[in-house]
Length: 129
Ligand code: SF4
Image (cartoon, rainbow, N blue to C red):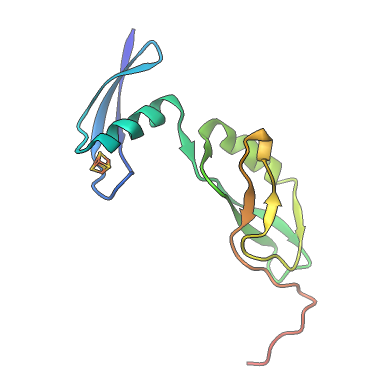
């Protein structure tokens, strides 16, 4: 039994809409792409979709209560919600530095989560304006 899906390639700004036929868990046909990169994108999107994870974690003693964090590379889509749940358990202590490791190898994915910006400590002296 086959199914069809329309997906938009986000590999480049052209944003081609592709029609994908899937049967027995395999991509049978891809149409609508303007280049072969669209075929690779369609295969990954259908068979093993990945997304960047961006969320926030709690910061203790910081000038802001939350720090934005992100995955170093895209995670399997199925891990996004469980990974976000894991990150809700983490509390960072300020100061936080952009690029700082928040947690390594989240859920055994091999992908690290890092801070996306600096968060100063609320105890740090404020600079004069
Ligand atoms: S199929 Fe090719 S041209 Fe179209 S969006 Fe993807 S990369 Fe760009």
